[in-house]
Amino acid sequence: MEGRDAFSRCHPLVNFVFFTLVVVLTMLVLHPVLLAISLAGAAAYGAYLRRGQVWRSWRTLLPVLALTAAVNPLFSHRGVTVLAYFPSGNALTLESILYGLAAAALLCCAVLWLGCCSEVMTTDKFVYLFGRLAPVLSLLLSMTLRFVPRLRRRQRSIAAARDDMGKARSGSALRRRMAELNILTTWSLEEAVDTADSMRSRGYGLPGRTLFSIYRFRRRDGGLLAVMAACGAYAAWGSRSPALAWSFYPRTGGAAPGPYAVSVCGAYALLCALPLLVDLAEELRWAAERRRQ
Image (cartoon, rainbow, N blue to C red):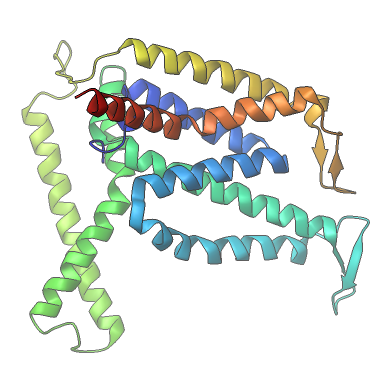
Protein backbone atom coordinates (compact mmCIF):
# COMPACT_ATOMS: atom_id res chain seq x y z
CA MET A 1 0.00 0.00 0.00
CA GLU A 2 2.78 2.41 0.86
CA GLY A 3 4.44 1.89 -2.51
CA ARG A 4 1.57 3.44 -4.49
CA ASP A 5 0.36 6.14 -2.09
CA ALA A 6 2.59 9.19 -1.66
CA PHE A 7 0.93 10.31 1.58
CA SER A 8 1.60 6.92 3.16
CA ARG A 9 5.29 7.40 2.45
CA CYS A 10 5.40 10.59 4.50
CA HIS A 11 6.81 10.60 8.01
CA PRO A 12 4.66 8.62 10.50
CA LEU A 13 4.19 11.77 12.60
CA VAL A 14 2.54 13.47 9.60
CA ASN A 15 0.15 10.55 9.10
CA PHE A 16 -0.70 10.32 12.79
CA VAL A 17 -1.33 14.06 13.22
CA PHE A 18 -3.52 14.16 10.10
CA PHE A 19 -5.82 11.33 11.14
CA THR A 20 -5.99 12.63 14.70
CA LEU A 21 -7.07 16.05 13.45
CA VAL A 22 -9.70 14.88 10.99
CA VAL A 23 -11.23 12.31 13.35
CA VAL A 24 -11.37 14.69 16.33
CA LEU A 25 -12.78 17.57 14.27
CA THR A 26 -15.34 15.29 12.66
CA MET A 27 -16.51 13.97 16.03
CA LEU A 28 -16.85 17.47 17.50
CA VAL A 29 -18.68 19.17 14.61
CA LEU A 30 -22.28 18.58 13.56
CA HIS A 31 -22.52 21.35 10.97
CA PRO A 32 -23.95 19.81 7.76
CA VAL A 33 -21.46 21.53 5.44
CA LEU A 34 -18.44 20.42 7.49
CA LEU A 35 -19.88 16.91 7.73
CA ALA A 36 -20.33 16.80 3.95
CA ILE A 37 -16.74 17.97 3.44
CA SER A 38 -15.41 15.32 5.83
CA LEU A 39 -17.54 12.60 4.25
CA ALA A 40 -16.40 13.52 0.73
CA GLY A 41 -12.75 13.61 1.77
CA ALA A 42 -12.92 10.28 3.61
CA ALA A 43 -14.81 8.56 0.78
CA ALA A 44 -12.46 9.89 -1.89
CA TYR A 45 -9.29 8.93 -0.04
CA GLY A 46 -10.71 5.53 0.89
CA ALA A 47 -11.61 4.88 -2.74
CA TYR A 48 -8.10 5.91 -3.79
CA LEU A 49 -6.48 3.59 -1.26
CA ARG A 50 -8.65 0.54 -1.85
CA ARG A 51 -9.27 1.08 -5.57
CA GLY A 52 -11.55 -1.80 -6.63
CA GLN A 53 -12.55 -2.84 -3.09
CA VAL A 54 -14.36 0.38 -2.14
CA TRP A 55 -17.88 -0.96 -2.80
CA ARG A 56 -17.26 -3.91 -0.50
CA SER A 57 -16.89 -1.51 2.43
CA TRP A 58 -20.00 0.45 1.46
CA ARG A 59 -22.12 -2.72 1.27
CA THR A 60 -21.41 -3.28 4.94
CA LEU A 61 -21.63 0.38 5.94
CA LEU A 62 -24.87 1.42 4.25
CA PRO A 63 -27.23 -0.83 6.30
CA VAL A 64 -25.63 0.43 9.52
CA LEU A 65 -26.09 4.02 8.39
CA ALA A 66 -29.71 3.43 7.46
CA LEU A 67 -30.38 1.86 10.87
CA THR A 68 -28.65 4.77 12.65
CA ALA A 69 -30.69 7.33 10.71
CA ALA A 70 -33.95 5.49 11.40
CA VAL A 71 -33.45 4.95 15.12
CA ASN A 72 -33.39 8.63 16.15
CA PRO A 73 -36.93 9.52 14.91
CA LEU A 74 -38.27 6.49 16.78
CA PHE A 75 -36.92 7.66 20.14
CA SER A 76 -36.63 11.42 19.76
CA HIS A 77 -39.81 13.40 19.15
CA ARG A 78 -38.47 16.90 19.61
CA GLY A 79 -38.91 19.55 16.96
CA VAL A 80 -41.62 21.90 15.78
CA THR A 81 -42.18 20.52 12.27
CA VAL A 82 -44.53 17.57 12.78
CA LEU A 83 -44.80 15.28 9.75
CA ALA A 84 -46.96 12.49 11.15
CA TYR A 85 -47.92 10.68 14.33
CA PHE A 86 -46.99 7.16 15.39
CA PRO A 87 -49.73 4.79 16.62
CA SER A 88 -48.48 5.49 20.16
CA GLY A 89 -49.31 9.16 19.71
CA ASN A 90 -45.71 10.39 19.53
CA ALA A 91 -44.84 12.86 16.80
CA LEU A 92 -42.55 12.20 13.85
CA THR A 93 -40.71 15.48 13.33
CA LEU A 94 -38.52 16.71 10.51
CA GLU A 95 -35.87 17.83 13.00
CA SER A 96 -35.47 14.33 14.44
CA ILE A 97 -35.05 12.89 10.94
CA LEU A 98 -32.41 15.47 10.03
CA TYR A 99 -30.55 14.88 13.28
CA GLY A 100 -30.58 11.13 12.62
CA LEU A 101 -29.14 11.71 9.15
CA ALA A 102 -26.43 13.94 10.64
CA ALA A 103 -25.59 11.29 13.24
CA ALA A 104 -25.40 8.64 10.49
CA ALA A 105 -23.10 10.88 8.44
CA LEU A 106 -20.92 11.44 11.51
CA LEU A 107 -20.64 7.69 12.07
CA CYS A 108 -19.85 7.14 8.40
CA CYS A 109 -17.08 9.75 8.47
CA ALA A 110 -15.51 8.23 11.56
CA VAL A 111 -15.59 4.70 10.12
CA LEU A 112 -14.16 5.79 6.76
CA TRP A 113 -11.36 7.89 8.28
CA LEU A 114 -10.42 5.11 10.68
CA GLY A 115 -10.44 2.66 7.77
CA CYS A 116 -8.01 4.89 5.89
CA CYS A 117 -5.92 5.16 9.05
CA SER A 118 -5.67 1.38 9.31
CA GLU A 119 -4.40 1.29 5.73
CA VAL A 120 -1.81 4.05 6.19
CA MET A 121 -0.69 3.69 9.82
CA THR A 122 1.06 0.34 9.77
CA THR A 123 2.43 -1.51 12.78
CA ASP A 124 5.99 -0.29 12.34
CA LYS A 125 4.78 3.33 12.29
CA PHE A 126 3.04 2.99 15.64
CA VAL A 127 6.07 1.26 17.13
CA TYR A 128 8.29 4.03 15.74
CA LEU A 129 6.14 6.82 17.20
CA PHE A 130 5.42 5.36 20.64
CA GLY A 131 8.09 2.68 21.08
CA ARG A 132 10.32 4.84 23.27
CA LEU A 133 7.58 6.54 25.29
CA ALA A 134 5.34 3.52 25.94
CA PRO A 135 6.74 0.34 24.38
CA VAL A 136 4.08 -2.00 25.77
CA LEU A 137 1.23 0.34 24.83
CA SER A 138 2.57 0.92 21.31
CA LEU A 139 2.91 -2.82 20.69
CA LEU A 140 -0.59 -3.48 22.08
CA LEU A 141 -2.08 -0.66 19.99
CA SER A 142 -0.41 -1.83 16.80
CA MET A 143 -1.56 -5.41 17.36
CA THR A 144 -5.12 -4.27 18.11
CA LEU A 145 -5.43 -2.14 14.97
CA ARG A 146 -4.37 -4.97 12.70
CA PHE A 147 -6.34 -7.61 14.59
CA VAL A 148 -9.65 -7.42 12.70
CA PRO A 149 -8.19 -7.28 9.14
CA ARG A 150 -5.89 -10.19 9.95
CA LEU A 151 -8.75 -12.25 11.37
CA ARG A 152 -10.75 -11.66 8.21
CA ARG A 153 -7.90 -12.83 6.00
CA ARG A 154 -7.34 -15.90 8.13
CA GLN A 155 -11.04 -16.74 8.18
CA ARG A 156 -11.06 -16.69 4.38
CA SER A 157 -7.94 -18.90 4.31
CA ILE A 158 -9.52 -21.38 6.74
CA ALA A 159 -12.77 -21.49 4.74
CA ALA A 160 -10.84 -22.05 1.49
CA ALA A 161 -8.74 -24.82 3.04
CA ARG A 162 -11.82 -26.59 4.42
CA ASP A 163 -13.48 -26.26 1.04
CA ASP A 164 -10.50 -27.96 -0.62
CA MET A 165 -10.70 -30.75 1.98
CA GLY A 166 -14.39 -31.27 1.22
CA LYS A 167 -15.58 -30.14 4.66
CA ALA A 168 -17.22 -26.90 3.61
CA ARG A 169 -20.58 -28.59 3.03
CA SER A 170 -20.50 -31.22 5.78
CA GLY A 171 -22.87 -30.65 8.69
CA SER A 172 -25.01 -27.64 9.43
CA ALA A 173 -23.94 -24.06 8.80
CA LEU A 174 -23.64 -23.41 12.54
CA ARG A 175 -21.30 -26.36 13.04
CA ARG A 176 -19.14 -25.26 10.11
CA ARG A 177 -18.87 -21.74 11.52
CA MET A 178 -18.04 -23.06 14.99
CA ALA A 179 -15.29 -25.25 13.53
CA GLU A 180 -13.82 -22.30 11.65
CA LEU A 181 -14.02 -20.15 14.80
CA ASN A 182 -12.23 -22.84 16.81
CA ILE A 183 -9.40 -23.01 14.28
CA LEU A 184 -9.20 -19.22 14.06
CA THR A 185 -9.04 -18.78 17.84
CA THR A 186 -6.34 -21.43 18.24
CA TRP A 187 -4.30 -19.90 15.43
CA SER A 188 -4.55 -16.39 16.92
CA LEU A 189 -3.65 -17.48 20.46
CA GLU A 190 -0.67 -19.46 19.24
CA GLU A 191 0.61 -16.48 17.26
CA ALA A 192 0.15 -14.18 20.28
CA VAL A 193 2.36 -16.46 22.38
CA ASP A 194 4.99 -16.64 19.62
CA THR A 195 4.96 -12.85 19.25
CA ALA A 196 5.40 -12.32 22.99
CA ASP A 197 8.33 -14.78 23.13
CA SER A 198 9.93 -13.20 20.09
CA MET A 199 9.69 -9.65 21.44
CA ARG A 200 10.98 -10.73 24.85
CA SER A 201 13.98 -12.48 23.30
CA ARG A 202 14.82 -9.32 21.35
CA GLY A 203 14.79 -7.21 24.49
CA TYR A 204 11.80 -5.11 23.50
CA GLY A 205 11.07 -2.42 26.09
CA LEU A 206 14.31 -2.78 28.04
CA PRO A 207 16.00 0.47 29.14
CA GLY A 208 18.72 1.67 26.80
CA ARG A 209 17.63 -0.49 23.90
CA THR A 210 18.31 1.17 20.55
CA LEU A 211 15.71 1.26 17.78
CA PHE A 212 16.34 1.07 14.05
CA SER A 213 14.12 3.19 11.82
CA ILE A 214 13.88 3.78 8.10
CA TYR A 215 11.91 7.02 8.57
CA ARG A 216 13.52 10.43 8.14
CA PHE A 217 11.84 13.76 8.84
CA ARG A 218 12.23 15.84 5.67
CA ARG A 219 11.41 19.38 4.71
CA ARG A 220 8.22 18.24 2.99
CA ASP A 221 7.04 16.65 6.24
CA GLY A 222 7.61 19.88 8.12
CA GLY A 223 5.64 21.82 5.53
CA LEU A 224 2.75 19.36 5.70
CA LEU A 225 2.69 19.57 9.50
CA ALA A 226 2.57 23.36 9.31
CA VAL A 227 -0.31 23.29 6.82
CA MET A 228 -2.23 20.74 8.90
CA ALA A 229 -1.70 22.70 12.11
CA ALA A 230 -2.85 25.96 10.50
CA CYS A 231 -5.91 24.44 8.79
CA GLY A 232 -6.86 22.36 11.83
CA ALA A 233 -6.57 25.26 14.27
CA TYR A 234 -8.47 27.61 11.98
CA ALA A 235 -11.24 25.07 11.36
CA ALA A 236 -11.52 24.17 15.05
CA TRP A 237 -11.73 27.81 16.11
CA GLY A 238 -14.13 28.73 13.32
CA SER A 239 -16.47 25.79 13.97
CA ARG A 240 -17.12 27.19 17.47
CA SER A 241 -17.80 30.72 16.23
CA PRO A 242 -21.30 32.20 15.74
CA ALA A 243 -20.65 32.35 11.98
CA LEU A 244 -20.99 28.56 11.84
CA ALA A 245 -23.61 28.15 14.54
CA TRP A 246 -26.06 25.36 13.77
CA SER A 247 -28.81 23.65 15.74
CA PHE A 248 -31.25 20.86 14.99
CA TYR A 249 -33.73 21.47 17.82
CA PRO A 250 -36.27 22.92 18.16
CA ARG A 251 -35.92 24.10 14.56
CA THR A 252 -33.15 23.12 12.17
CA GLY A 253 -31.11 26.07 10.97
CA GLY A 254 -28.06 28.20 11.50
CA ALA A 255 -26.32 31.45 10.77
CA ALA A 256 -26.37 32.86 7.26
CA PRO A 257 -23.23 32.00 5.28
CA GLY A 258 -20.62 34.72 5.12
CA PRO A 259 -17.00 35.20 4.04
CA TYR A 260 -15.63 33.96 7.37
CA ALA A 261 -17.77 30.80 7.29
CA VAL A 262 -16.66 30.13 3.70
CA SER A 263 -13.01 30.53 4.70
CA VAL A 264 -13.42 28.07 7.59
CA CYS A 265 -15.05 25.52 5.28
CA GLY A 266 -12.24 26.06 2.77
CA ALA A 267 -9.57 25.45 5.41
CA TYR A 268 -11.35 22.27 6.53
CA ALA A 269 -11.70 21.11 2.91
CA LEU A 270 -7.98 21.68 2.37
CA LEU A 271 -7.21 19.61 5.46
CA CYS A 272 -9.45 16.72 4.39
CA ALA A 273 -8.12 16.76 0.82
CA LEU A 274 -4.46 16.96 1.85
CA PRO A 275 -3.60 13.26 1.24
CA LEU A 276 -5.06 13.37 -2.28
CA LEU A 277 -3.27 16.66 -2.97
CA VAL A 278 0.04 15.12 -1.89
CA ASP A 279 -0.58 12.15 -4.19
CA LEU A 280 -1.54 14.47 -7.06
CA ALA A 281 1.62 16.55 -6.57
CA GLU A 282 3.70 13.37 -6.60
CA GLU A 283 2.10 12.15 -9.82
CA LEU A 284 2.61 15.53 -11.49
CA ARG A 285 6.24 15.56 -10.43
CA TRP A 286 6.87 12.11 -11.90
CA ALA A 287 5.02 13.05 -15.09
CA ALA A 288 7.28 16.10 -15.46
CA GLU A 289 10.36 13.90 -14.89
CA ARG A 290 9.25 11.49 -17.61
CA ARG A 291 8.67 14.33 -20.06
CA ARG A 292 12.17 15.66 -19.45
CA GLN A 293 13.60 12.24 -20.25
